[in-house]
Image (tube, rainbow, N blue to C red; front, side):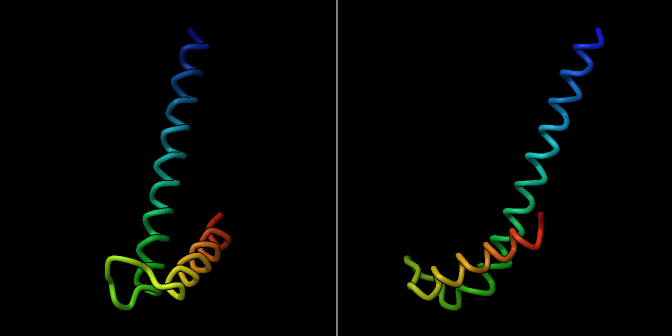
Length: 64
């Protein structure tokens, strides 16, 4: 019985971690998109790509 409870608790912790990671990525994407994409179109300029890459790196460093 205890091992079943432990397995359920581990699954819940894993789901919470996954949800937190998804929320972090959604927030990073929204912020970096607003900061880097000035004229939305069908492709990204090299400057926009660089901006997004740097923005996401900084965001991930600041939100461990």
